[in-house]
Image (cartoon, rainbow, N blue to C red):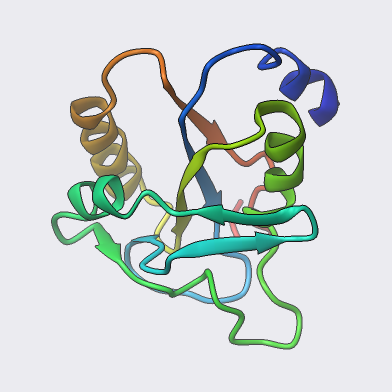
Length: 138
């Protein structure tokens, strides 16, 4: 199913991808915008758009952080990284803004949505919401 969805992006000129995913294994009270330089996959590294990430990470609900991005358990988070090889195959080169939501409340989700709406201009950015929902919420 995911491959069919990603195939719709083929041939589009996308320079930035925001991927939003839930935290499965670590609880924290905000959306963590990755503060690192790149995400590594078997297909190579994807650079993080650090400027966009810094502008997005404002306020109490959204912070620059490696929480949820760097594994703190033996299991490791996977909800964001499973999306990346599909994007690499379909889009080729792009910059990434990885967001892991430790707080999935209405307030935190709305804050992230409003912040993204203010920052995303034009057609060169897409937002992907990981369908790998948390197993800890009703």
